[in-house]
Image (cartoon, rainbow, N blue to C red; front, side, top):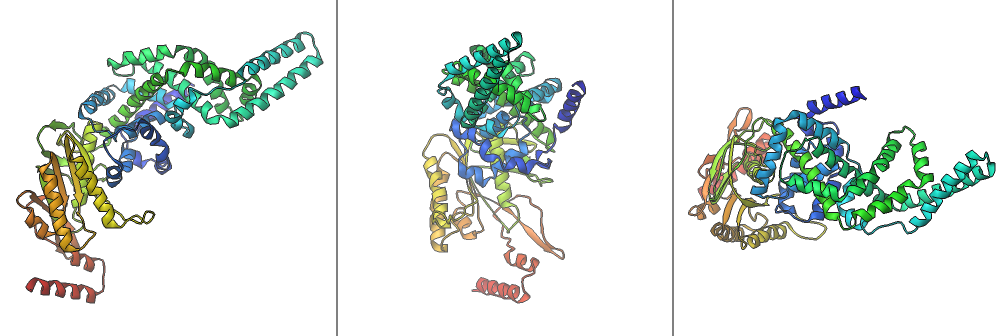
Amino acid sequence: MFINKRKQQELIKKQFGRNPLHDSYHYMRKDRIKLIAKYHDEVGEGTVDDITWNDLEMDDVFFRINHTRSYVGEQVLHHRLHCTDAEEAEGFGDTVSFYENNETERVKAEELLMGLGKRNDCYYMPQLIHILAGYEFKFAWAYRILQALLFLFLILGIVLHSSEFMLAFLGVAGINMFIYMREKSQSEHMMDCLYGICSLINVCEKLLNCKCTPDFPGNEVIREDISRLHSIRRMSGSLISKRNYATVDPQGALAMYIMGITLFDLVSFNKIVRTIRGNEKAVMDLYAFAGAVDSGISVASFRKSLPIHCYPNFIDTGTIIADDIYHPLIENAVPNDVSLHSGSMIMGANASGKSTFMKALAVNAILAQSIFTCCGARAEFPKSTVMTSMAVRDDVTTGESYYVREVKYLKRMLDESQKKGCVLYFIDEILKGTNNKERLAASEAVLRYLCKKSGMVIVSTHDSELAERLSDEYEGYHFDSRLTDKGIHFDYRIKSGFGEGTNAIDLLSCYDFPKEVVETARKTLKDQNIA
C-alpha cells in the first residue's frame, strides 16, 4: 500500500505541468463532452453563448486546460470557462496561485480528488440531485423485516445446529438477492448518484481537515454544509467501503452477494435520502467547492505547461493592449503585440493569420475573465462579454442558408449592444454570403451601428472598398505574405494600416492548379484593374 501510494504521488508530480492533449487517452475523454456539459446545462448561467463557444473551439481549449482528477473538477472547469466575471476570476486566481506555490498541499488534494474518479454515471449528479431528494424505496419497512429474519435464521441455525433454520436463512437470502437485483436495475442511476454524494462529502471534509485548500472565508460555509450533512457521513462510511470493495474485488461476486442478501444498500438509501431532502443546496455547495479545488489545480498545471503566461489587467477604457499574445492551441505559435481601440478592421492575404489572431484575442479575453490567465507576456482587457460571428455554416437540417445564419449571428450582437456593459465583438468576413452591392451597404450599416455602442468591434475583411468607407471610424491593420521561390511565405505578424497585399491567385499556383487556370486568372485580374 505504501509503495502504491508513493508511486501515485510520483505520477501526480510528473503529470503536473504537462499538456493534456499529449495524453494517449485524450480523445477518449473528448468523446465525453456531453457528459461534462451537464453541470453547465443544469446551472444555466454563463456569458459565453453557444455560437461564441463553437466559433472559438472552446471544447478544445477546455481539453487543453483540463488536468482535473475528478468528474466534479471537469464539470466545474467547463462551466467556469463559460462565465466571464473579472472580479470572480481574480478570486479564483488566488486559488490557482496557492497550488502553484504549495506542492505538498496540491499533491494531497489531487490524491483525494482521484478518489472521486470520472465514472460516467457520476456526471448526471447535478441533474439527479433534486429528483433523488424525493425518491425513496416504497417498501423499506419490509426490507428491514427481511434483514432481521435473515440474521435471526442465521443465528438460530448456527446456535441450534438446525438445518431447517439454515434452509430458511437461504430462502430469505434468495428473496433478498432477487429484491436487491430488481431494485438496483430499476434505480441504478439514483443509487450511483447517492454513492457519489457520499464520496463527495467525505472528500470535501478531508480536503479541509488536511489543510490542503486555501484558507478562505468561504471554507466556513463548507464546514457548515458538511456539519448539516453529518448523519450522511456516519451512514456513508460503511456504504462506501462496501461499494469500493465490490469494485476492487477481481470478481466482485462476494461483495455484491453480501450487499444483496443483507439489503444494506436499500435500507441505507432511504435514510440518506431523507437527510439530503432540504439540503440540496448544501450538496451543490460541496460540489462547487471540490470542483473549484480541482479546477484550480488544473489551471495551475495549465500555466506551468505554457511557454509564457501572465495575469490579466482589467481596464475601464475600450482598449485591448497585449504583448506576445498567442493562441493556447497552437504549439510554437508566433506571438503578436497589439494595441486596439473601439473599432479595428483587419485585412490581409489569405491564410496569413487574420482569423487565428482574432481567435487568439477572443480566447484570451475569455480566459482572462474566467481563469485569470492569459497566453502572453502582457494582457489588458476591458471587463466585457465576448461575442463572435466567425465559423458560420449553412444548416441543412433547418434549411437555413449561409446568409440567413450569418444574419442571425449578427442580430444577436445588435440585441446585446442594447444592454449595459462592454461587449467585445469579433466578426470574421462580415456578410460574405450575398451579392457585393448589398453586402457592402449592409456591412457598413452594421459596423457603424456597433461602433457607436459601448464596446469594441474587431472585424476582418478582404474588401478594400469596405475598409475605405469605414476608415473614419475603424483603425486599419493587416497581415501580409510574400511570394518566394519556395512558395508563399507568411510571417503571421500584425501590422498597422489596411495593407493592399493579396495572394488568392498565388495560392492557386502553389497548390498546383493547371497553369492555364492560373494564367487566365492573372490576365482577367489585370484587365479588371486597367478598366
